[in-house]
Amino acid sequence: MTFPLSSARSSFFEHVGTTGSTNADLVARTDSRHGGVVATLRQTAGRGRLDRSWSAPPDETLAASVLLDARGLDGSSLGWPPLLAGVAMRASLASLVAPGRGEVGLKWPNDVQVDGRKICGVLAEARPDGAVVIGVGVNLTVPAERLPTPTSTSLSLHGVDGAASDLADRVLAAFLDETLGLFGTLVEHGGDAMASGLHARVSTDCSTLRRDVRVELPDGTDLHGVAVAIDPTGRLVVRPRTGADAAVSSGDVTHLRYE
Image (cartoon, rainbow, N blue to C red; front, side, top):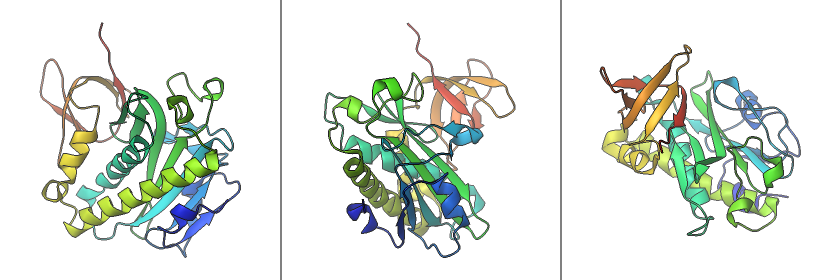
């Protein structure tokens, strides 16, 4: 398997048969350049946000990481690359899921869901040299009985046919096109997501906005309210029933459903 579509979009592309983590591989590489990619269908020690493990059934999931040169961004702009990656993956998967077979949405900050079930996670890691490594894990052909959680799904469960290797290349190629384009726009505007129109794009794609949510904060407390906006630095703004709006930079978001 050579990832012909994806490798044509990358400055450096490595397909590894098996690896612990594509993010760890790319973080450690000193010869990688902007747009460099490591990809596999067999990741054994993947991680999600908040240091959670990411279960990846072999030969049924895509794990891939891309390196972005973020030296042109200041600290207040570094919340945007993972959000843009989430938007990019939402677009990639939405191009494959036929109308009527599922609604693809982006849950803040960067989980991609189909009909409210997680199909892809995104993890961003900064390197000391100013680069940011964006890792994605996508459930491609995982059947229902092998899904990692009861709230997960896969492309094949939404009517997307094809071998995992072919789907992986199609998903990754479209993701790279979108990510590199969106990130380039952010850099061109000096990290100003508002002026570049990227803030509006993320806000449009984010299914968390206007929802009742519970946010489990890093300190162990919960924040309940309505997600009303994404602020200029990419934080989620939550309006509780009482008190002032709160801007959240990290946390585990649950979309609440009230009957």
